[in-house]
Length: 100
Image (cartoon, rainbow, N blue to C red; front, top):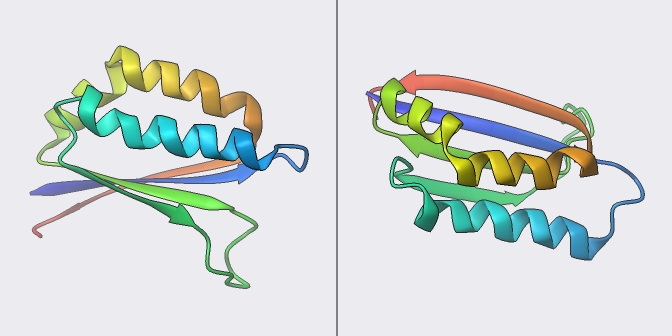
């Protein structure tokens, strides 16, 4: 089974493009810092009227719930949360398990 850990961000209006890029860079760096992550897909929204104002999203892939739990407690993940949290006014996290 594969776990898809989906994170959507809604940045505060005053967040600069440089700050957004800092969050993107931090997310991308997690792949080399946390062995439990299989892969990461990240990107800005393509407008959808049902998108609820979310600006960007990340999909992390993990081979198991145990690997997702390793990620959650990893220092690099906690540091990344510390960087992103003050810049966001909305966050949605959704995990699904699939056979692909």
